[in-house]
Image (cartoon, rainbow, N blue to C red; front, side):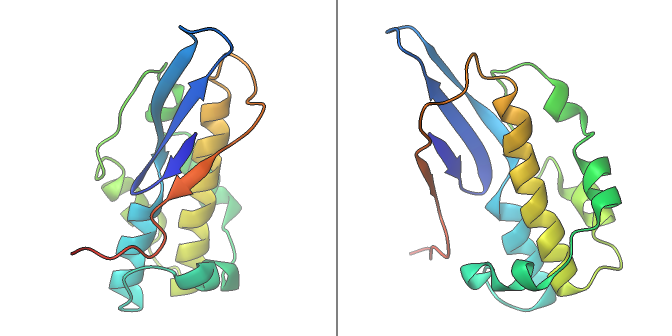
Length: 136
């Protein structure tokens, strides 16, 4: 199970009754939602259109995935704002679209890093998250 809410998290379920591992993968929708609010005045990147229009800066992305969180052994958890300063610095000078592309790519790379901690590759992924959810 992969949940891409504000923070991403994975639950790996193995073949045995005790084969279970759950941990946070890294930032997911929260930084992108915050970026959209700041740069385009929208609550989220509707249908991923903003990120799709941008270009990922590979050097900035490589620096982001060097964060110490990714080398910590699971189980591990993440505060929604733990990456706020790092992501703010990484997006300085980027257009709205390029910043969105970088943040979306970073969420993907965080999941890729998490897969390396799983006892075996998942046979199937069930992915969920809050795309464009509203608060009541």
